[in-house]
Image (cartoon, rainbow, N blue to C red; front, side):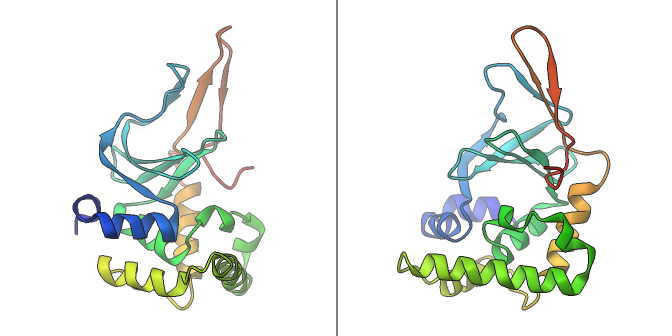
Length: 188
């Protein structure tokens, strides 16, 4: 299924994705952020979406999805677009799930995932937004199953974020010095 095409053609669905997951599909693929020529990546790709913060989701040449954060974070988050959308829908605001200690035990991860999601539900209720209902509508429209236990999806995300080769950014300062990340969003 071509999720990007479907979202580009359906503005209401695209708006729902933005509201539920803070992911805004771009009208066309773009060159990833390069900070006026100072930022380079070890893998080519095209930006297909952004977060409200300006962070970018990049479809990498191998079909996996990379993330470049507006605060300089960079790494791979999904092996393909289907897994990307499964992660976004099952774990909205996925950066809230970046606590590596929780990934060491499946039961702890399950409890952690439930806790994070419940907190998101409570926070959105304050804005009179029904996250559960909106997420279900989005999932149904995209043909993605909402899992009662997100631990499996999160472990898939974790393995993808840790695998080699990692998606790495390098920032070159005006004086020529370079700074590179580790390529794992869990290395904070």
